[in-house]
Length: 248
Image (cartoon, rainbow, N blue to C red; front, side):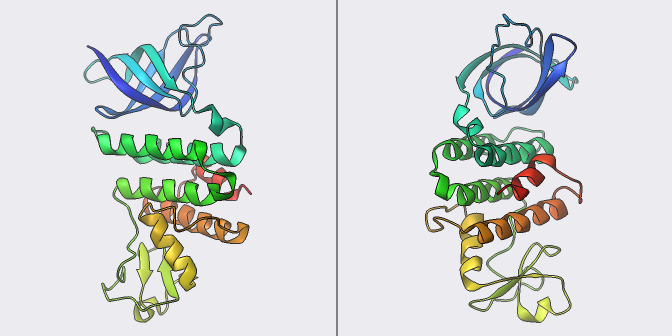
């Protein structure tokens, strides 16, 4: 069956001497694997269209019950080359793509496709000074769309109301915890300003955050990475996410 669908390239790798296997995010068919025959040939019809984070319209020959389909054509709309011009910008986009590739549900979720495309577009144009905040907002919003948003409006352990100001964040419990429940737990203590920043990130609201200092950006990246490893990755290493976390 030949289908035409919007598609976003999450990952690609060589297959044999002339072909390439790509992992595509689509709104109607979820994440799909496809072989682009002849994609590595000098005069391939695909050209440079299948670079990671590119977006376009894919023509796919799909067969029921198969994990690998055939990519007949890819009409590129945007390559997002701006992401590749700065390492921190590309690192944020690659981490987002890795999370979708590893943890997105197999069935159709058009809202996830739209969210990922929007966040990647924002990463291409956001001023460099606001890139740390934009990357964190994009990643937290994506985790939330996958159903793993942290609890930030009440105690994640007991459901109690949270006090104002400084608060504890428990990775194991998946969110803020009140003082009573935090006793004996391994937690990260967030000052009032950092707490407010995290809430904005989880809600996908970048505007109030503005520019993060290098110290605060690094702390928020560590917190996000620990959360993902605990709640999505079962402590497995995610290469793109690790690179994004450590980059200055």
